[in-house]
Amino acid sequence: MKRVLVTGAGGFLGTHCLAALVARGWSDVHAVSRSAGREPGVTWHTCNLFDADDLAALMRSVKPTHALHFAWCTTPGEYWTSPENLRWVAASVTLLEEFARSGGRRFVAAGTCAEYDWQHGFCSEQTTPLAPGSPYGSAKHAFQILLSSFGPVLGVSTAWCRIFFPYGPYEHRERLVPYVIRSLLGGEPALCTSGEHRRDFLYAGDVTDAFAALLESDLAGAVNIGSGEPVAVKSLVAAIGERIGRPELIRLGARPLPASEPDLLVADVRRLRDELGWRPRTALTQGIEASVEFWKRYG
Image (tube, rainbow, N blue to C red):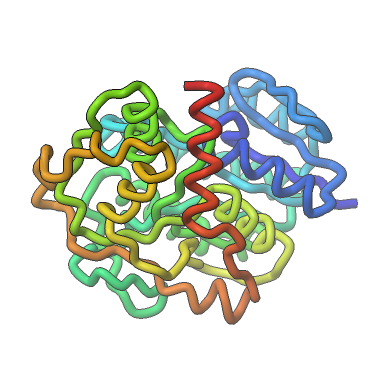
């Protein structure tokens, strides 16, 4: 009997992942967060993952065979440099140990494109240097090293998902797509950079379906989670403006682009496509429409 535990289940990607697992036929899905949710087909648990005793008790109770680990600090403007990244490395190591101790077999965790050396632009798991430029990227990479090293020792199959630029419903309201949508819906100008830089955007529902597909496989190591298609930020915000019908409110060039931001960040998705056999299903226009409808309801 397969039983999956999802950490960070109340967050942006965790919320989407619960739906992806249920859609794929997982009948024993357990979600952990600081407060219980109500998603159908999911058993909720409240747990402080920083408390080793609380975590051990959770694992003894659930005894998951599979785990998807999303929980981490993610507040915009804070997570890049927060000392809490150190606590999440330690908590994640304890999570892995307790998972193995309870008989767990497959552990898939969320990494980040911030682990790469961004000067290279096109990021490949096998050839692009890993040189994080932030405490967040360094902390994620540190746990990836520990996971890949100790997974085999503990008898656990592991995979590491380097996420690029997800967007969609439940995203933090201060991130780019929600900010632009909420500004335009409110009749306010959306102050943006020039938008010439290109990024790899992928709808959150597709991101988490890729996680679920990877969980069901035996593919090991780092796997980029992205579309593989570079999109200029100005094209993304223009599409939002057209969808809402207020393109005149977009102010390109109103904000400077930080010097640390490269011209290009896009995923090499050959492992995702060729080894896992997975491809996105949501076009950018569809993802924007879903995001706009979400913020119309909850903005």
